[in-house]
Length: 403
View 1 (cartoon, rainbow, N blue to C red):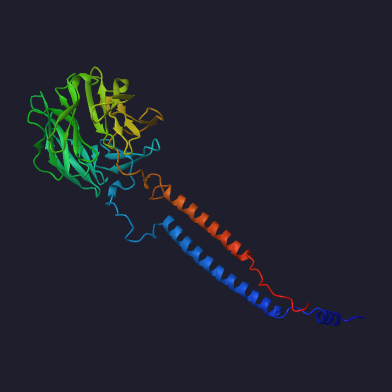
View 2 (cartoon, rainbow, N blue to C red):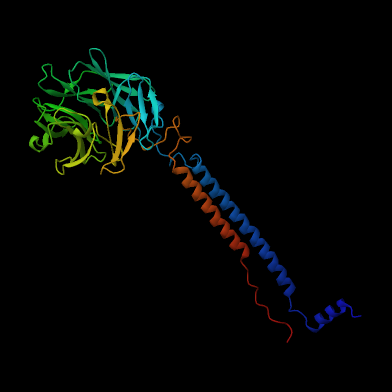
């Protein structure tokens, strides 16, 4: 019987391998193993670094450094989670807020009674009106729940007030004692003596600050059938009419407001003294008086912080009960909200209120997006690691030592 070892040795004697071939094969094996270890280590470090950064940004923003982290907003206190919500008064049960993205979703902001009129730009101050037995008060409701009395007045009629975007000034209208004219007044938000604003002979109402605080829009004139839309600088200078009385849809106009971009104004008009239902028509017009455009129907119109939607509806018994309707500016996507009313629209970006419905304190799109990106990065790195492990290093060329 032939011994296999003899056959193997005979084959080697007859066909000797190239010189140094075993040495080269050993070096190749060592080099491959070393490269694999280095590649695996580099890939592991990259995966760990990217995964840590991705998940830290997705679940808490810990990846930001103090140099790149944006300036934190002021403490929102009782207003936390109300970004993009509509606040309204519900006597005697205080001030409430409605979520404009979920009809019927409301939360109580404060047990303090009052009618919300306007926000400061940073969402930390809310201007409210409170009617007492023989007087009315304008107050600032602060984020910590405290109140600052701005001014007390006894005007027979009160056609609105406005808070400057920086929260330092309050603009309001007061009817003269004989009821013949309206005057515009400005007062510091911290209180103090009010002062008339505009030309000495100016009569105006529904004054409202522009989004950047540089202009004031108001209705000038004597009332029914004699109103004009005017604009002046915030210091009361450069008062001029942009839409004459004859061009205004009448007879009675009100609820003047700016679109967030400062280029257009929104207002409503009523017919024949009736202020509710289809007799209230909404209009938009450019700040220079051009482009007067009729919109939908509804009392007390107010524009959303992004300028895409309009809230309207009744605010009390004078309008036959409370109601809230929100629709796109072009009249599409109409939503009816029970147990709510139109009011000051929080200027901050939309944020679900954790007390009402949300389990997250951050806007909903941020964390899922970051998680998706992190998983995609891990998959891509996994493919790269697999490719590196499968890669073959070609053998160096070796000449046969045997002819």
